[in-house]
Image (cartoon, rainbow, N blue to C red; front, side, top):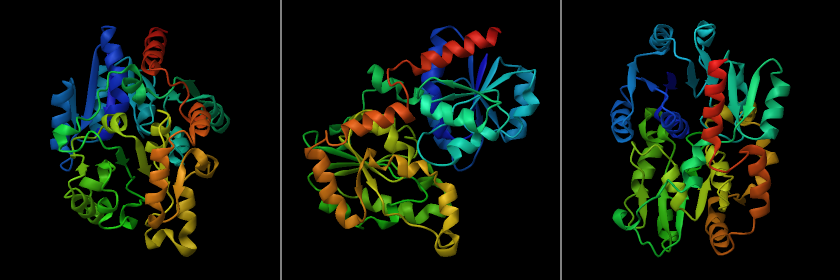
Length: 356
């Protein structure tokens, strides 16, 4: 048996292609999901939709107790697990980071005591191996994108949502912090009336009390006839990426995932910073965002201010090929192979090494 540790619902889109591949090979798969009052209804909905074989736990200690009892061949994590050392000699452990991109956590999470990490491309593999020479990293590519590349992800039915299928579609997928949400014009859908707008914020923007102002803005924008706001349970970005012509985002994993599909990206350089990240505390922001951010800035067209956003978006819709060369170059470095076979490579490794 192979277990997937689901600390948050948004880990599932990365896990599911691998789990499906394992089940095709008659491998038993179990999802260990953490109870949480904020997200319980969302999790129940996802479990039902994907017909997952689930064990519910209250916290990390309960998860560890289950892993020690079951002695699965592998336990797969989407982030650091502080008790991973307790599984040595009982189950092998692997890390599938739930996102890609410039945030420093992409690298620092490898400090955790996990046996192997699946990574995306040779550049990231080399950098991680240089940082942690004693650890094992395997370049498999980014499994989350497999369903789109394979043609298994049908995307969004625009007409069913009340949108116009004849219009170009924008996907606004901001992260929760630091975010461009607070800096967007309050009535910006009016200025983009010739487009469908899909709003797919980070899960935290919809469920965390700290981001209530973001939620209020998102719900206000959803009142426009050309806008659809993803429901809380729609945690998977893939259908939205499959259907969109252009992505608008900030320093998020979504930028690089969308660019890997060879579609144009508009990067918002305007974002809201808490006072504790400004002025003399700006070093905190620099620590949060890895300096690779600037190395890859030209993967996208940039809007330095909200007032520039419309003209930048219009340009990308009319000339989607403008950044194609950089998208291809940086996809190779940050995502690795985009061939629809990443989940197969991960399954191969798990099964071969699981027998070792």
